[in-house]
Image (cartoon, rainbow, N blue to C red; front, side):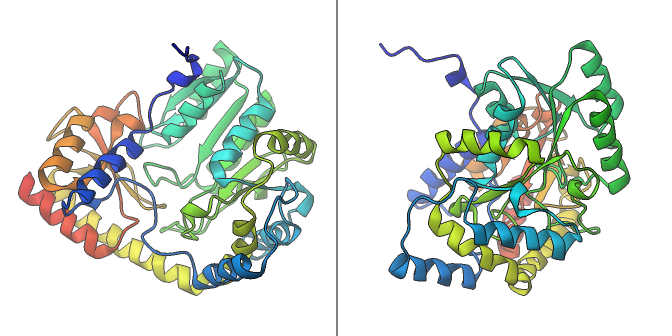
Length: 379
């Protein structure tokens, strides 16, 4: 019998388990509405799709430089200049197979086995699972209504040194945003203690209450990870990027050469065109805002209050404790009874997750309205 490693015992990503069951029901003919996965319902921009189609028919597709096609890296650098007013040398940009590869590469480059990586709770569950799969220790720091607690980080570091802090803003699953002064304070605290800082900016350009602030504008030694998946509606293209301190570039390149070779060539050819599609993509964002407004209006009346301000991304982090203290059971019953899929909070928060549910409003506003009607009748 094949013996599996302890690393292989990593927890499942429950959002994907819920999606699999939703797809099974849908395949059987059930009228499923999925609010479980953070995947835009909109297609990739037309210019991106046209560039990909042309590349398939005429392009010489193959392996690229491990750090990415020069044209894409240059386009990413120009994006930082145009959108944030920040100059980023092309030499510090690494193209990755989605942001997921970026997290693995960053953890491998910054830690040795047994190293400690601090993350927030609630937070994206794949962080925790990737950390454990790499034989590292996740240090989960609870985040309340007051936001990230630097003192909690420093106390955990004093007990046993932390190698890396990873923060996302806007955050998944809460949509919460870390404002520039607070973000600067975190970066400075990490610098003083020798803690590497990773900023997950995958939900940038999906902020609803202000302007994006990249960590690159606040410190030179930060690591930024981003992707074309969310704002650019390109989840299936598996194309992301990292902005690295200069001293880290070669290490990430070596690791990526051996683990991934290169990101998908066709996605690299098409992705630069996304930066010129702001009008098309902002129209999609307007739909998210309409759905967000609908949820903010109706969820409290259903006894599902917002547990965090949905300032960005496309998620509602809901307190369902008036109905259940078992979010997995609640999500399963909701899917089975009314064919509405949402993600149990237990996936995101080992402390308070059992009484929370994450609702994704990345679909159409019509989908959200119908789902709310079903939930109201069900409750």
